[in-house]
Length: 189
Length: 136
Image: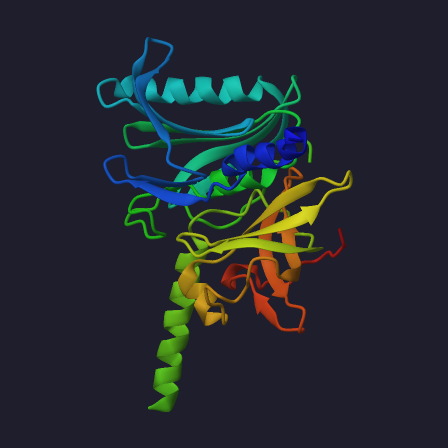
C-alpha cells in the first residue's frame, strides 16, 4: 500500500499535541505566586547560585516545541543578607546575555521588579522578569529558539504578563508600588 | 435616592476599574500607537488577572503566527458585554491593540470588531485614546 502518502497525516497527528496545548493558570499558595503556562509544569527541586554560595530553589518549567517557559523561585530565608546581591547579579547577567531590546521597571501585584526582552547571539529570544518578594527571588524566563522566535513570541509575552503575586488575584494588601504605567526605559525598541 | 445610587455605582465602578488595572504597569506596551490586525480566533480564555484572546494570523512568509492579546479580567469584560461565547473558533475579527515595544506577536487589546460590525472593548484599561495610529 502507498503508506508514503499517509506520512504527512501521521506526522501531523504526532506533531499536533505539542502545539495544541492549552494555557492554564497555576497558583502556588505556599510561594505566593501564580502564573499561566501552556501545560502542567515539570517541578524540579534544585539550587540557585549566589555570590556566596547556592540557596534552595524550585523550578517550574514547560517545554513547548523549541520554547521553554520557566519560573525559578529561590529561597533566601536562611541567607537574607545575600538576597540583594543575588538580585543585582541576576540583573547584570541578563543585561550581558545579548542584545537587550527592553529593560523596564515593572510593578506586579504591588511588587516592584524588572522586565527584559533580550535577543541572544544564537538567534534566540528571551523574555525575563526578576522580582524580589519577601525572602524569595522570582526569576521568570521564556526562551525561544530559532526558527520559532516570532511564532512563539506572543506566547512568551503572555507568560511574562501573567505573573502575579499574593492570592493570585489583583488585590494586594500592602503594595510596595502601583500598577500604573510609568516612563519606560526602552533601550532599543 | 437615584442620584445617590448612581454616585455609589460610579465610585464602585471606578474602584473596580482601578483594581483591575493595578495588576501590572504597561511598560511593555507601546501605548502611543494603536495598530490594527485581522485574523481568525484561536481561543478566548477568561482568567484573572487578565483574560487572553489568541488569533491566528498569516505571516509575511506564509507561516501561521499565533498572536496573543491581553484583555481585562472577566468581571470587567462582562461589563463591556463579553461572554465566554462572544467569539467562536475560526471567527474572522479585526483587532485594535497597543503593540509590544519589542515587536512580539502580542499586544494589549483595545477592541474587537466582528464581521457583523459589532464592536467590543478589550477591557477598561484600554479605553484611553492613544495619540498615534497606524495599521499593521
